[in-house]
Length: 204
Ligand SMILES: [Fe+2]
Image 1 (cartoon, rainbow, N blue to C red):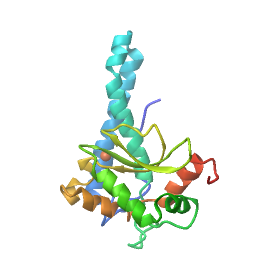
Image 2: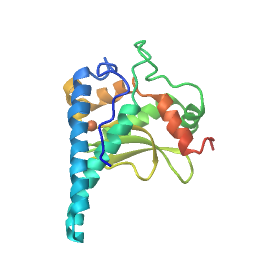
Image 3: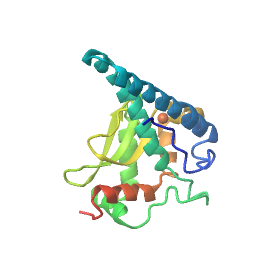
Image 4: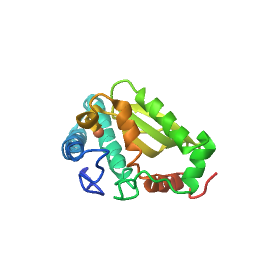
């Protein structure tokens, strides 16, 4: 079963003015498609490999491109057109279990965003910033991963792509401006859905 590029759940210009159409088109049609193609090529080569040595040699490609496909598929779904722009529900966090968990952990949504942005801006090189659900104590934590490593230690609730391809065409090298802007298009409804799935439907 081959990996395929998922459709975006909004138009390429749907996240403007926070993420430009140009970024979204390139990011989805070129970057994500490249991970999908390379993952399928690596999977096909793995299926044909006849020795452990050949299979081991393919593992870096499987991890990088498989992670790229998993991470971007999550990322598109955790964004939505901005509520502030009257285009959708992006950036709006309603009262409910997710907001309660955020406030319980960080004191307020604003403090949570500030801490997330500080931790994520500190990633050296390319990577991802995450809000993850710790499967042991069911609490939210801010974590980062390098390159295209998928989040395996936590249930991913919100993921933010910190590769330059995600922001450079609009924000140049100013990663903190991209991070400040992206909260206007975070889909907290999707995040809450993942949170409820991760907690088994009940808040702890
Ligand atoms: Fe990306």
